[in-house]
Image 1 (spheres, one colour):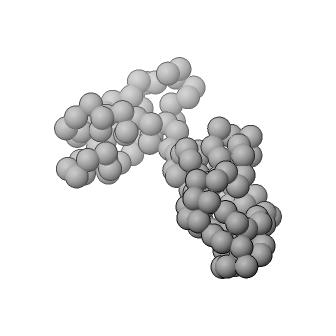
Image 2: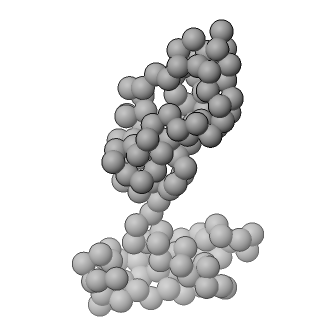
Length: 127
């Protein structure tokens, strides 16, 4: 990781990798990450990524045309950079999909040009 990619400052991060839930302290000290408080290697990696480039799985709903229900739950199939979540939600709000829909169907391919697809989280029949 180059120095320019590491944010300045420090952060307390609650690890969610396992049930232990360690409180991990991450700090940029002269361009090097200092990570303390983790009890496993996975926790160290999680805290590092959360400090440098946090990502989230996005879950929401999308409007449906001719469906048994007016909305269907959807999610991203890969984590999306946290700073792109609001923009992704705005893009999803513009879309209306047609029923029938099967769970796992891709309803938006490579949203915002990212690697993540938006996929259906349930089946929905046509009326």
